[in-house]
Length: 321
Image (cartoon, rainbow, N blue to C red; front, side):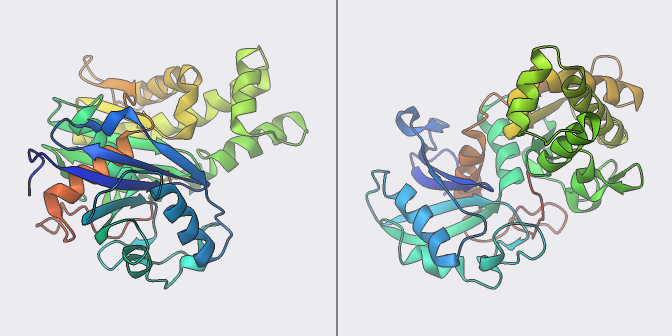
């Protein structure tokens, strides 16, 4: 089966607080009928509650079985086996050691099988296949949310190692100011920085962004500091990997007006933008890219990992975008 086949793939995308379902028209590189559905997910709930939320969301699709479902979700997860490896990441602890493939195959509408893919990989592939990175041979995708997810692409292949690529392609594994990057760039880090700056209890990031747009200097400073730092960490990677596009997605990228300028400034200061060769852009498919990318991966590789040790989409990742 190849991406050119006239195939509709049912897909689930799992975030820290939600699950989204859609049917992807692979031939058209688009969500079928431009529709997606969302249900809340309790990251602290039981495995049974988690599966129930996914199945409720999936039931809203019109699936004519048998169908091979694709699921994009964050790590740590054994994507080849379909088993959770979550421990100490603040969510989905009930899925540790849980056989999610078996649970979903028996419960999803018409399911003849289920494949699992890293959410940051799926996002980047979705934007390369049908979004802002389409037509680019070399691209980097990052997701900003509960953490920093990342994926490095060359000719539509996921690159895990090589010049400019952080360990296993995981940007969150890098450090800033003698601490993990996610202590500066993440939902919790932005909220903590605002509370520290104001002495107030921190609202959620969306409210901090609203205050920044209304002239709150502390709120604006939080965004400026975090994303200038991100650009500084990412700059040497970009300079060595030499992508022609950097695509940014995830919930925090919804505040692109507050993210873009400091991110570009940090990249420039770190040597990541030279001679105008890098396009830095928000996702063109912010909600759909992980769904599209999961369908692309599923139709390209099926249940198995892609060949090649350094470029395999199904290797375990801990990205938390």
